[in-house]
Image (cartoon, rainbow, N blue to C red; front, side, top):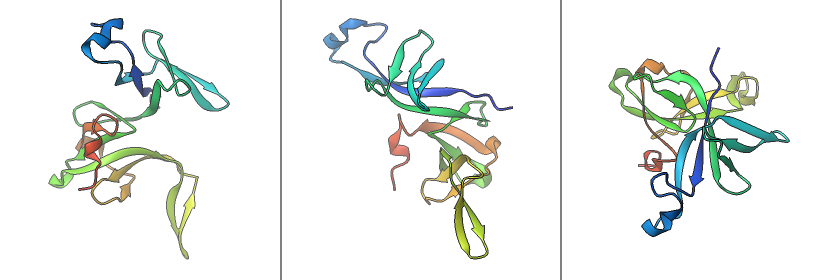
Length: 158
């Protein structure tokens, strides 16, 4: 069974080594990806998340920017692969970059063409340079090289 874990991109307003005096260093906030320890829902939507220290981050106060889920896969180095990660596919020396994402609707083929179904939601890998997606990639060939939040230049069209 796949372990269910989440991370979140949050905005923090204090550095542990500067505390409330961040403004003296010219910094008033910064973004960080944290491990989520608790999620609170309101009417089926994420209300807020908490980190290991019990600090809360929410979309309402704009301290929470995104939440990403663990795919259950690890790359060739044992690093956990999350939604929003950018991985390099080392299979057959392709060095292809792939973006990891969750997709509810999946394209399927019928005798009269393509149709969409919600029967097989799951994590997918989008080929960044080609725009195509794939479902099956051997995780032993993958290496996490960044994510779309901290390294947006990885997914910019070339």
